[in-house]
Image 1 (tube, rainbow, N blue to C red):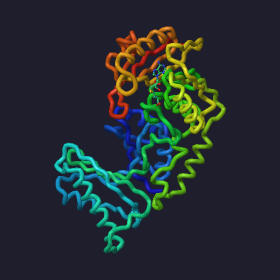
Image 2 (image 1 turned 135 degrees about the horizontal axis):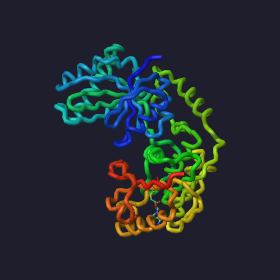
Image 3 (image 1 turned 90 degrees about the horizontal axis):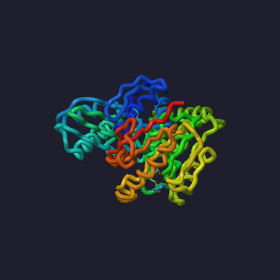
Length: 375
Ligand code: SAH
């Protein structure tokens, strides 16, 4: 099987997690801003789409060159062997971005790339009429940074955070790959209790349970490259079968999610059910100040309101104070709290052992970590 240069794209701040996942799957990698480079076959494209928990998309790097004029962009795009990947009827929308480059008009850049690929295909197949674009989807991206052009084909289609289990979400849901990243940034291991006191639609806990049972995140959705005839479509069912065989149903997990909002608890239960982990998570309606536990050495992870979307500033600050009081009584637990509120530690009443900068979508947030006593 042919090998392709690939990138796994990642949200700012979690490149190192995507890198670890790729290395654990056995790939040689190179980390860059917002992405990790690696190489692989059609089967590796299927495998990484289905297995990676923290990445956004898997893209094939189809061309890389410098261009400062539209002519040069056109010629170098035209010169690439598009006919080796795209069938004659391919639908190939071109998206674009351009940073600090002479070719700064994104619509023009997209138009030139589109034109060059269409011309190449028409010349190759000796067609005079415009292409029908009625076939499978091949999303193309042209990204220019400091006059360096990167042309990629997106094998994922919709972003990998869309696992397919979350049919309903609340007002401020976390992306699934972000929730998985949060779990991976903690010391949680399936033998430890895990608790999310503001669980909303349950995303963090569902991702943790899937990690615990070794359920691949992309098992129950489809990807753009699955219907690409030139890319061995049969490898997808092989990879899915391998992933299914690797699921560990027997492992006992101790996972609890609570939320003040009873409707969210119902939604969380349905989502967990859809993800195949309904029996591994207990959900109940409760306000976080009522939580008491005899369990020790647990891990608490949460994404409480920040005072921008769900609650007003004063309510949020009062909530952080309550959290500090309750969690102070749990010295053996490690607590991990995501918030964009810069005064979080003041209201919580304790300086974090460690903070990590992340982005929740476009919003700058900190992951406040309070490490519990060692076992
Ligand atoms: N991570 C979740 C979203 C959490 S949003 C997801 O991906 O869906 C924050 C949640 O905190 C909301 O669901 C809200 O109902 C809950 N919440 C607000 N105040 C609370 C309180 N005092 N006790 C428990 N939950 C609370």
